[in-house]
Image 1 (cartoon, helix red, strand yellow):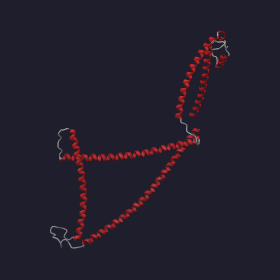
Image 2: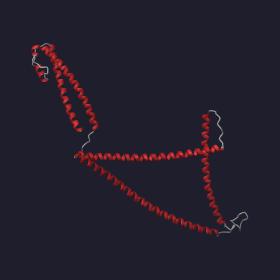
Image 3: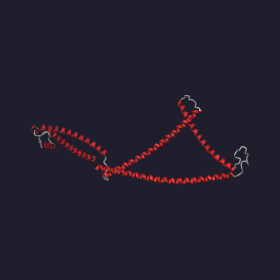
Image 4: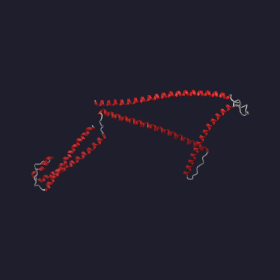
Length: 321
């Protein structure tokens, strides 16, 4: 039941967080909509102003045109109009305005022609470089001379490749923009997950509690298990050595004294037995007794360390579970 309540609490916290995010988004969208509405109203007012200005300029232009038509003498009164059909009745001022307009149109056409000429020169330069590269790669091989049709086809192919390259650049820019958007979304989700984990930790454990590093605990537990296995192997080796030295000590003390000692004698009993022996034993037996005492002390230390290690492992197991 508690796990069910905890799950419901988690779902509730998640929904509260999502609702807050959606509320922030809604507020930002509302502000953006208000800004766009103000911009639209401003654009509409500017459009009306420009339309009014255009109407005023159109009326002024028509009025000036009517005035210009009545200014000055006509062309028929000044020049020979036999070669000027349809322009004999126009005044000099009106003709001057028309010539100015034609001059502006010709200037714009001249600019376009110059731009096209510059592009053609760049294409010709590029074609010459390609031809030079082909000649250098051909190493003296004769290549057929390109005719006008082949050159036009080559230029057309070059323009198609250039347009394709521009299209690929636009696609690449779109992909980069999409990547940046995905990175921002990923960062937002990561921050959201961290925030939810922090809130969940505060709800479950209380404020000021440091989360348990499960990976570190598992690694430490694995290391402790290896240490326990190694200590158990050392303990088995020490027990085997102790049994061996016990058998040697029993043989050196004599058959009579060894008859009452069981094979499963404890460490404490072994120490009392060694201390109660007579002092007139041989030097070899004394050395063996001291060695056995040292082994018993080492075994006791290892057993105590093993017990402490088991307690530590139990504590770690409780922390993990």
